[in-house]
Amino acid sequence: MEEKQRSNLLDVNVQGLSADGQSVPKYLRELLCLAFSAGYSDLYFLPKRDGYLLSGQQRNCFVTVAKVSSDFAQSLIALMKYWAQLDLAENRRPQLGRFEFEGRFVRLSSVGDYLDRESVVLRLIDDGKRKGRFVDGAAWRKLVARVPRAGLFAIAGPTGSGKTSTLYALLQEWAKDKVVLTVEDPVEVAQESFLQLQVNEQAGVDYQDLIKVALRHRPDILVIGETRDGKTAEAALQAALSGHLVLTTIHANSAEQVLSRLVELGLPEVLVKEALVSTMYQWLEPDGAGHLAAAFVRVDWGMTTNGEEDGK
Image (cartoon, rainbow, N blue to C red; front, side, top):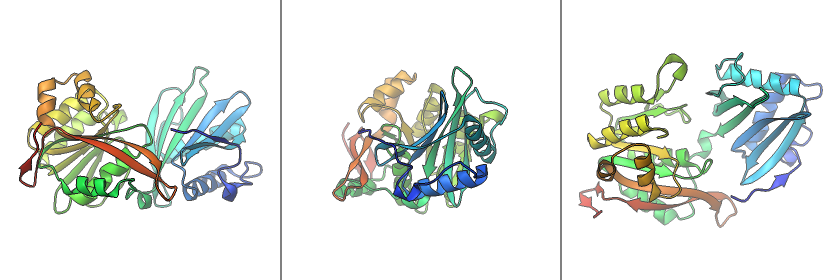
């Protein structure tokens, strides 16, 4: 991904945003409003020697937003963690959460460095912009038209490439008149027509527990937000082999390498080949209008769709 450095605040629309004389809540609300309106995907609150650097990702550019004092940044972080219902006293161990901001969602990740200075990354999730933009519209329409009956459908790609957006775009097309149940950590896109379950490790509720419960609800489509470890992979495999259509995201370097990634997580290769129906790898690149759009490649491992079966 091309990375550029800009020193202006967010964008021309954000110039003049300063912590001087502003309350923490007002500053944070203005920051989030301006970041959403400028099309930011992520905001970073990173500790430096003389304070905190606020920066973000915008259209494949890494942008410096502002520099604030450590005290002010820690107050911002405490407020965000309060909104996300995280442990305010914990500033070393990793914490994950989310909060709602003016009808949109913000996913929060925090962790302390070796000096116990807490850093935070926000993923800005705007449901109104998650319909998906694709470089090859014909390839996308072909993908949407091929609805798997059952099995494991996995989407891979770099962090921030829009895997979850694509997953939900597929669901909008495939989930009509069907029971859809999602298991996520955390839920990123609220959908009233789906039954959405959220991992809560502090309460002892993990992916595996929720997937077991989900299968008892007999969904037509089961969504596992991310297959990140062996236990989650095993649960996804069993669900796919038992006749459910399972959609998930996974970190792999190509559509083909999803298979080897699942084997690395401890799954038998023969069963993975039996369960996999399709894998895709996507990345972002500028479209003809200069906007970022998703490009993807797909591998069909042999799936039954609309009465037709592809050879493996």
